[in-house]
Image (tube, rainbow, N blue to C red; front, side, top):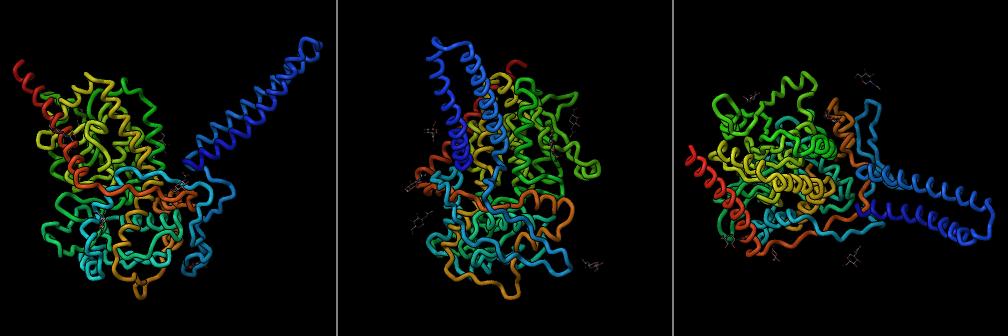
Length: 513
Ligand SMILES: *[C@@H]1O[C@H](CO)[C@@H](O)[C@H](O)[C@H]1NC(C)=O
Ligand SMILES: *[C@@H]1O[C@H](CO)[C@@H](O)[C@H](O)[C@H]1NC(C)=O
Ligand SMILES: *[C@@H]1O[C@H](CO)[C@@H](O)[C@H](O)[C@H]1NC(C)=O
Ligand SMILES: *[C@@H]1O[C@H](CO)[C@@H](O)[C@H](O)[C@H]1NC(C)=O
Ligand SMILES: *[C@@H]1O[C@H](CO)[C@@H](O)[C@H](O)[C@H]1NC(C)=O
Ligand SMILES: *[C@@H]1O[C@H](CO)[C@@H](O)[C@H](O)[C@H]1NC(C)=O
């Protein structure tokens, strides 16, 4: 952002410089006007025309650049496209990729978004003991792969097949991180489990001498110590045609503009697969019917049918047509969360047991409306009634979540989160990471060159072409225990406040009946 702003400023100064110059020139002519002839007036008009022209040109450059913000690269920047060998020789990793990150132009001192504080919390179980090789080996039990980074290069030992291609796109993401910040990551070894639910139970590892196995995955909950890491969908979910996050986000921002908030359907909306968890089946009871109206419209997503019909009915940018959107977890956290929160309809967030890496930075009543999970229908009905009676406030909550996602969950912060998490993790290692015997270097080429179809397409779309010009954001300090207490209390308070309003609403409602 800073880089682009500086660039815009420079361009702006350049153009305004020339405009000012001309203005001055005209100024002197203007003063001379009384003593000059009609020819001077003619020249004035010519010069005035020139200004208008220059200004228009100026503006069009401006809007061109701002529309290109996310993808604009300085022309001098060296790019590293995929180098696939076209012969039948095995694909190897290019040797000329930079091993140092030198962000010369635009140092950034910006502090990372507050959800980065949870990196300290997630790693706290190892803060006093450090991480030994033995602990890591014990995490192998459920891991899908071991990732090793030595001298800025990645190596992988694969243990078992993951669901779909989760492991592949997770590794792809890590390879892009290495391209984003070449040579900046320390040596490390870690175990990654691509399944849904966390498994490292905190109750098995109590006391000061506990040595829990550090295990990375996409979510955790209050009973487990698994370390949360961004999920594969940030680089695309090929099986169901969900594009890399950067591009979906652009589509959703466009989708937000399509229907004005007040003109949207004044109902709560959800579309998804209800068969993955009992809580979702429970939600299905809330659909409008002849007998009841819970202000809720629910639709079943049939991915099989959609895949045969080209996903026409599942474009994520078409889903902001209702004033309220429901988020409900699935078997664990749901990938849908960021797509739902990015839409500027107010999110009705059904109480969730699992968390991913960014949701801990979002607050009930500020970014979403909390919904009970044990009486979903009445809770949803009240939320919609409240929103329709407080349109400005409901709209503001929707905008707050959409802004949060656009600003704090843009891809550069996803890379920063990965960077800081891995960096802090590596500081805890008590041994020297070593390349597993027999493993080969993993790079974007060895992965993407042999990939086919949507898999290949998404890899090409999410490929990091050149390293970033900025340093990682600055890590925030850990929560002190009082802040942490305050954090939990604040959320409990807002949730309780909503539940009280809801109780009152239903008491009055029942009195009227
Ligand atoms: C690669 O090998 C396949 C068969 O294994 C062959 O049909 C093809 O022509 C080869 N391509 C090149 C470029 O050598
Ligand atoms: C960043 O911080 C360093 C040290 O605190 C300071 O010297 C430098 O001027 C700051 N840079 C910017 C761009 O604010
Ligand atoms: C970890 O321990 C160090 C001292 O050993 C302390 O400075 C740091 O704040 C601790 N980190 C957390 C997250 O508590
Ligand atoms: C919910 O109700 C709507 C409107 O009647 C209907 O189109 C939709 O199929 C229903 N959804 C489910 C899951 O039954
Ligand atoms: C969704 O729609 C937008 C615009 O309507 C389009 O640009 C985008 O490619 C579509 N996404 C998919 C996955 O088809
Ligand atoms: C939560 O509510 C209680 C009682 O209403 C109040 O004393 C406390 O200060 C609140 N805490 C926060 C963090 O807002």
